[in-house]
Amino acid sequence: MPQAKPDTAANSQPGGTAFREVELKLHVAPADLARVTALPAVRELADGPAVVSHLRTVYFDTPDLRLFANGVAFRVRRDGDRFIQTLKTVNSATPGDSAAVAVRREWEWVVAGETPDFTVLAAQGVAGLVPADARDALRPLFVTEFRRTAVLVRPDAATTIELAVDEGRVTAGTASVPISEVELELKAGRVARLFDLALRLQRAVPMRIGTESKAELGLRLVTGRLPPPVGSEPLGLSPVTTVAEAYRHIVRHALRQFLANEACALAGGDVEGLHRMRVALRRLRIAHRLFAPLIGSVEADRLVAESRAMAKQLGPARGWDVLLTGVIDPLSANPKAPPGLPILAAAARSAGAGPAREAVAAILAPHGTTTVLGLAAWLEDGRWLANADKDSRAALDAPVTSVAGPWLSARLAKLGKPAKLPDEPKEREKLRRRLRTLRYVAEFFRGLYPESATLPFLAALDSLLAAHDADHDAATGRKMLAALPGADPRTVAAVAAWIDRQADKRRKALPELWKRFRDTPVFWT
Image (cartoon, rainbow, N blue to C red; front, side):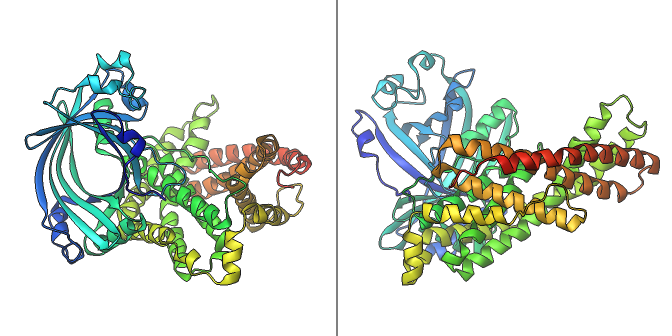
């Protein structure tokens, strides 16, 4: 669990101070921003008066953005009469760090003015972050200017948090975006207190967890690129990981993936961001269902159930995207495509616009943030482990290897021995969900076993699951086409016939896929 304390090895570098920043960012509507420091939750915990400052920061990089490409931000900030040069990793969170919290390494130097001092970049520990051949090419890229109202709060005797309310703009050339956010930086204590404070603020003022730094916002202005979807990071379990550690790690991982794709989903340029948010919530639910008998928490059960409702709100937009990219677009490239297909495609895009807006509204709704913050606060607080009864504590302290194999075997046994697609739609869907659950559980625990054993099994399972997913998408697409208002019946029939032909090909391949899967040795025995 990250703690807010200096990096003592880095502190020995001459001329600079290095430390590890642990921060939770919350976006707030500009009209609500001024209310934050006056909230009872802040006034009651404040250690001294708020301090107001006006900050101007210039960010530097090479024309080809070498520093940002390597996950580094280099800046000079003016705070009153002082100029502080900072080298910061954009986000150096490790798999063991808490979800929703940005964990970064920083080095600071006091400099004479807004022009950077490159000589200090040769110091041991930072020289590799800004290569010598890049220093002469560094140029100003963008500027942030904002008013910061900061106050120290002490939720308990062991915890100090700096609450900073920032209002201003990020500017690159003629383009700019507003800054309207609250940053909670842990100065001392446990990271769980960040979430507790954020929840108290969220109950009074609507807020949304932010994952993009000011540096990342500026970079987006410079490049004009929308945020891309973010893939899942590898899990970091090992044979010495306990059951409790595995649970905490997997849930953190799911929450982190959910939040990492929020910027992509809100930018509206790629529906894949929405899909990966749904996948993250599904991983969360499957993981909790797996561990729940050992955790035994009504509060966690409730929060995870609320995440399911959120996932349902993100689903319809993904359905229309699959219809367009998986059916209509491939068929459009076919010389025998029906002539009415362009009109049908336009109708499908129009029909998908509403669900996409509803998905964005669900992400922006305060309840979603409350659910994520609540789950993170519960997870990081750790009372579910500390207050467990004797038998539960023994099970949670056991190596995760003691349960991984039996759990995987149980999920495999639920598949039965089908050699073809079941005739009943409900049975087909049940089988597909069981395959998907097995795939997620296998992904959770693959790091406990040799890669030479896991890869063949996962490859066979992926091929089988992809075929079942495609059959599900085809059936869903057929229903969506049939319900599309104003669509030409002949064009719909032609597209449905194409879907059926593709489905027939996949179904013929299923027996061989099932045979390959059954013949592949499992990796956990």
